[in-house]
Amino acid sequence: MAKDEEKNSQASAAPNEGEVKAKQEQTSAKEPAAKAGETEKVADLQKQVEELTKQLDDQKDQNLRAQAEMQNMTKRFKKEQAQLLKYDGQDLAKGILPVLDNLKRALEIEVEDENGQQLKKGIQMVHDHLEKALADHDIKEVEALNQPFDPTTQQAVQTVAASGDQKPDTVVQVLQAGYVLHDRVLRPAMVIVAQ
Image (cartoon, rainbow, N blue to C red):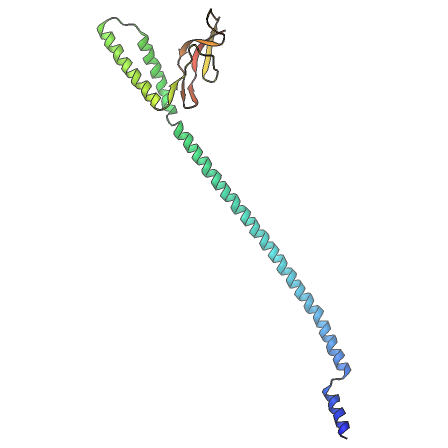
C-alpha cells in the first residue's frame, strides 16, 4: 500500500500530460501576440527616432544657414561701410569742382593795375588752399595734357590733326580738368585729342 500511496502522491504531484500541453499551448499562443505587440512598439519607436533625427538634422541645417547668412550680412555691411567712408566726400567734391574751375578761369585773366594784381594774388591763395584741401582728401586732378588718351578718365570733345611732334591719340589741350577720388572718377577731363 505504501507503493500505491507513493504512486498517487507522485501522480497528484506531477501534472498530467494534458494539463501540461494545455498550458504550453496557452503560453505559446500568448507569446506571438506579445511578440507582435512588442515588434509594433519597437517599429513605432524606431519611426519616431527617425523622424526626430530628421527634424534635428533639418534644424541643424537651418541653424548653419542662418549663421552663414549672418556672417555674409556682416561682411557685406562692413564692406559697404568701408566704401561709404572711402568715398565719403564724393558729392561735396563734385559740388566744389565748378568753383575750382571758376578760380582757374579768374587766374587766367591778365591784369595790369595794382588792385587787380592784389585781387589775383588773393584768388591764387584761395585756389591753392582749395586744391590742397582736395588733395588732403585724395582728390586728384587727372593728368591729361600730352598724355595718351584714356577713355576711362578723359572725354574727347574734339579731335584735331596731329602736327609735327604730336603722336596720334595724344591729348593736345585740356578744356576742363578731370578729377578722381581714390580710384573713382569724379569727373572726366574734357580734352582735345590729336588724330
